[in-house]
Length: 343
Image 1 (cartoon, rainbow, N blue to C red):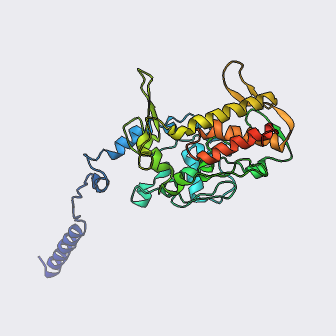
Image 2: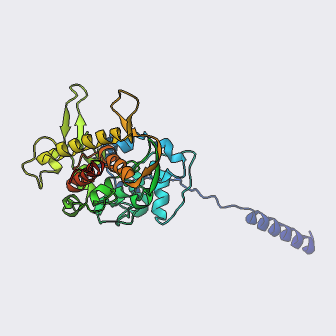
């Protein structure tokens, strides 16, 4: 074999070897690990049942029942009737219009709390919330309640010299915030209105201090219920533990010093006067349910009497407990107006 041919064969062999080396691939093994829930357990544990217990309580609350959830599909109602609307408010409390949703979700844990955003179970609302008439007061952890638990109407604007009333006339449902702050009732000229400020000034967290005072599954906590009814005996139990811090001698119900009895008696008297004045009617007949009667051209004084009755006796629902002096005076002043001989 000639030297040239030998060199050529060696060269071909080297080229082939280099080609094989260049085509060699390094095979590596990537181990896929299943994601672990370690981040969840930084906040939750298998033995911490507080969240579960709160959820069970919530299911027994009026909020949890979701009876008015359908209202959340309306832009004018979405703020308080569904989770999506409340979140819109939190994002921009100054907003004037809201976006309706076709599939509203019920008020729930993440409506008031945002633990996965904030890293804790603190409340979304921490600052005093203004009523529609501009009045506000720092209720601590109860501030968030006032976002929705208010009349949603300013009586000074709502009632004019001549008014059209109907069965839905009066403050919007849930004006407890207004009552607690002693404001937004129809106040007659020349009448001095009292105020019982203790339930807002001596309770660091306002609404929460009374309505969340834990007693059991059916009352307190996230049920917000202050009463519970035994389904078998129909006996009603009152959560007076929330009252005993100040009213050490309170009995087994909320009629402390006869406040509720007095307010109910005044309410019954005012209702009778409104019926006589053709401003209120029982509907349906025989039901025991009284509503404002549809009418137009109603004077401010008469409309104010209707407002005060609806405010105290129908919508607030505490029978005077939230603010005894203010509740009594709203009813009494309306009674005086409808019976001018009373001095």
